[in-house]
Amino acid sequence: MNTGDVTWMLISSGLVFLMTPAVAFFYGGMVRAKAALHMLMLSVGAIAVVSIAWIGCGWSIAYGGKSIGGIFGIPWSQGFLNGVVDIKNGVFTTTTQSASGNYPIGVDVLFQMTFAVITVALISGALAERIKFSTWLVFAALWTIFDYAPMAHMVWNKGLLSPDGAISRLFGVSAHDFAGGTVVHINAAVAALVIAIIVGKRRGFGTVAFKPHNVPFVLLGAFLLWFGWFGFNGGSAFAANGVAAYAIISTSLCAAAATLGWLIVEKIRTGHATPVGAASGMVAGLVGITPSADVVSPLSAILIGLIVGAVCCLAISAKFALGIDDSLDVVGVHGVGGVLGTIFVGLFSVNDGLFTSGNIRLTLAQIVIAVIAIIFSAVITFIIAYILEKTMGWRVSTYEEITGVDITRHGEQSYDLAGTSRTIVRRS
Image (cartoon, rainbow, N blue to C red):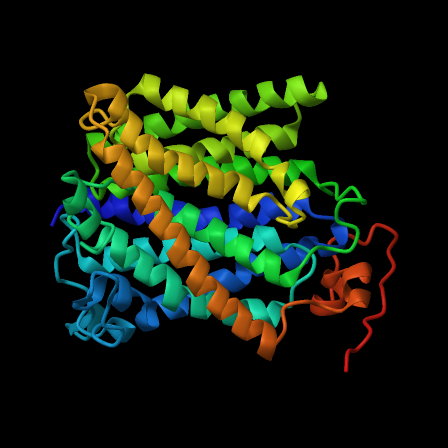
């Protein structure tokens, strides 16, 4: 055991946990004031439900059990950390060494739990101002168990999409997803798209300007996400070492370049370089570098950032042409950024990249892996979301949506500047 590695991984876990409150403020500032608390509560719900689901059986499915077809582990083999925690001198502890690094396996359980939480929280951005909190809670639990945990198993635990998996063997290269281009960003974005289609558009979508009610909150959330990403990518080195340091450097370079790429496109298109655009560009760059933070050069990280920032800025307008209300651009930022980042591993990887070695095999493998991740997430999410639509229902009433889900669903509101309160209308 290495106490330095233990310390770094515990700090990284805290940084990744911080990303969910950061997402709450990032999303909360983007919606109208009447739905800001609801947006924050969706992240609260993700933290509460996913944490329990992860310890209950998510960890076992992703990392704890015998692999079933390279897709998932046995759910009950380490359910509720059976065999992971034990009693020593009258207190519970984890002593077994992690397979990932020189620290107890309990550190891995914690670190990976924070990843599961933030992934679910990201989905909520596409569903702003119009979904039932109760349905969201049930979805968060089911999606963690049936989608996120198997995807993590496939990519990070010698499964189908891992460096040792069937796709890698097919192309004769080692597929690479350093910190979650597929597991987190593509996965969350596809889920967000599927549910947004099932739930439908907000009243006034395409005709009403849904303006952010608190731009400082948006920027605060983006800055905190950048900070948290140091643990997200740096912690994915699983040690306090030079790889962790370099991953943080490349992450910052890409985020900085993507901010500029987004703002340049925005300035050309609208005549303004906006704070919300800057915040969105930061996040796009953070997403884009996630799969490759340890294997691309500083110059490549900057180039990736510029491309991802510019392309994501252009991509977010597609929702209007398609008539899909991806409220806060989860698909345009995390989906497009995640797909580009996954493919860019194959282009810019220092060892096997097309632009660095002339070998196209890694690029092809990364494309196939991205496609499989999209299909898997779409199918599993559709099944879960459709069942919930037919049983619990996703959508709040028209009255609640117009009045605001904060007061009708949660009984409170973000701001009461006039010193007045509003009456809560009970629903049958």
